[in-house]
Amino acid sequence: MPEWLKDTVFYEIYPQSFKDSNDDGTGDLNGIIEKLDYIKDLGANALWINPCFDSPFKDAGYDVRDYKKVAPRYGTNEDLVRLFETAHEKGIKVLLDLVPGHTSDTHEWFIESQKYEPNEYSGRYVWTTNAFEGIGGHPYISGMTERYGAYMLNFFASQPALNYGWLNRTEKWMSAVDSPEALATREALKDIMRFWLDQGCDGFRVDMADSLVKNDDDHKSATAAIWRDIRNMLDKDYPEAALVSEWSNPQQAINGGGFHMDFYLDHWHNGYNTLLRDYEANEEDNSFFRAKGKGDIMRFLDDYLPKYRATKDNGYISMFTCNHDTPRPARTLSERELKIAYAFLLTMPGVPFIYYGDEIGMRFLDVRTKEGGYHRTGSRTPMQWDETENAGFSKAPSDQLYLPVDQNEDAPCVSKQAADPDSLYNVTKQLVKLRHDNPDLQADSFFKPVYAVKEEMPFVYARGNLLCAVNPSMGGIKIRLKEMKGREPLYVIGRAVAENDALIIGPQSFAVFR
Ligand code: GLC
Image (cartoon, rainbow, N blue to C red; front, side):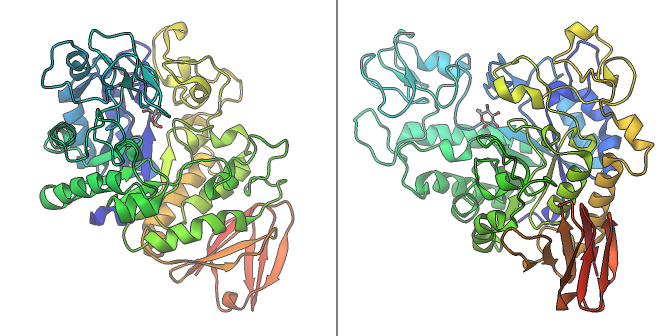
């Protein structure tokens, strides 16, 4: 386990939208390098950069055309290496985004694979034997290639599924997990990882990590076995490299696959969803952090605790403020609600991720789809740095920006918030610092609910020797709690005091007691 994960706060960067250094309207790697001091100042000490590789961008870069080449719009491979080096000088690690399940249909492997003549890449993707035979239960395309057969899709129509084999094989065209072609795909994946690790990258966020082996069992044991094999490679040759999975099943990803971290994704009605975004199908918003919601921390804990307990000795659950697929939390939460929510996220065990712009409460914008974003596009707009043209993101004419910046008069930006000690930005910064300053609040130290009652506030939890209390509701509360004896506040948002064996906590407040 890489030691550095114990005290890491990640910052996710969608490279299109972070900082445009050459004024062509799209963010780039040199723009990220320019802003490393900003990231360091915020207190984040690791980055996850969404795919920055050569791509036709039908899915924002999750359709990779060449894994070993930086997309020209972002810069060159040399720029990426310079980003690693400059980040490292500042104590910042860099994870790239690895897309193992599929490529773009313009990837050279696929161009070869679809040829009539059998070749080295014929088995690199999942193909049936004839064009009239589909793949039951899975999306596929046929009739577009000179090769006889239908090919399986892993996501959008432009993303054919790479072939890692099938666990339960019912057709003769289904490769075994240990067939030469499935093993060749796996080796090609390892080769890509080595390519970037050798140049200084610190690991990968792994896209759709659970999607490798088809017809896998309920535990995804065959897919997990592939990741175990890859973890063994890391342990042996790159022990400091870290992997975080987009899986959202830590028992499978961490205990099974050997991932160091697994994302707790925003899935309808899972524990994470009940915290910030419990509004989609409902008319009412019952998110725990909505002051007027029917807050119920048990809906979170019932889902989270078994996952946490089952995996805490092997790896970390990663919670995030948001990501590039998820509505910005500011879509529904007020600035005060965001402060309380971030205070919780940044004092939980595991390894937290801040999505660029959430530190200033960037809004979910009503914008037209871009590069296969659809409803996700509103969370992918340019970072708002200051009050100059295009919010300081780019000097390109506004109509040439990757996506429009927030045009509202009160649009949040870094420069305004940096000057206001009480801003969301400054509170986020304080919270990150609080975490770095207190090992009890970091990844490993134990988590235990101390006061958690169905449909009641507040929620009190222990982190090591510290006690955290959170009350997102509109009402002040006093509860008897023997654990409060002798405690004093270390950090408070709003109002909170320990009075003998009672906790008094104001409306929309958060506190850490020592
Ligand atoms: C993951 C990514 C998402 C992408 C999809 C296909 O869910 O986060 O953005 O569209 O995989 O690669």
